[in-house]
Image (cartoon, rainbow, N blue to C red; front, top):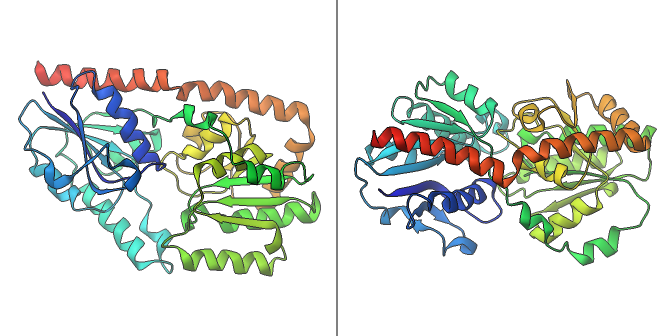
Length: 360
């Protein structure tokens, strides 16, 4: 029996790519020679993946794990491939968010959702990485079994040394650092973070800094509007747009941060929430999409994008040491649910049950 993974793009540092590489180690339990096939392969992971054109025809006992997250020809090609099919659903950002910013991204998202809807009834098992994603599959009329298993997160990577230049530049300057990590994109609602930050600086901490870590490739128009908006609010000099940065620089910002703030309106999982828990940051987030699933009762969830409410919440938490410690302790308990051992065991159980069903 061969077990392969298939996905549109694999790149180091990307949540889907990291998940694919981690799953590869688990699959070796059943297929020591398991392979990864992708349409696009990042230079840093070329040793781990092969082009889709090299994927062999699969037999009836073989299995393909397909990572679905975007528009791709693979959505249409998957039903014609041999073997049993397991779809790991990472979610597709609704096209409406890209309207007016990127026709290309909007079209890709539309194609992605249409392609995934077309797979209803054509896969044997779905694995969603959040309850939110599972419910979305049910709404798209998937009638096969749908299990939930979080993304496998490489926590050992977070123990690597943070960028010393950044630490030396900002550490100990006496300023509060509010952090958000995520690509600069309309669904992340960075403009709502700017509104919150304006209120926070005006009424609570005039020396604070907002750090927005994330690439804006393909979203240049949106990013420019954010910069213009920050300038109009008079906070432009105190908002850091990092763009695409190296991993050790991301680690440095987590070390420098005092709180993690999230106004995102759409997430299928949101790995940075878990990263913030790992680094002991209190998380204050808008309750939307999969964010409540990922936080799992930890952190602080706000019912809306009210900037004044979030600013006041951040101030209260950062001023009240006991409260902050209580919140962080809750996040540490939740973090245990994402341990490699626990998630790996969950995934192995799902796959074992599926494979036993295949061989029955």
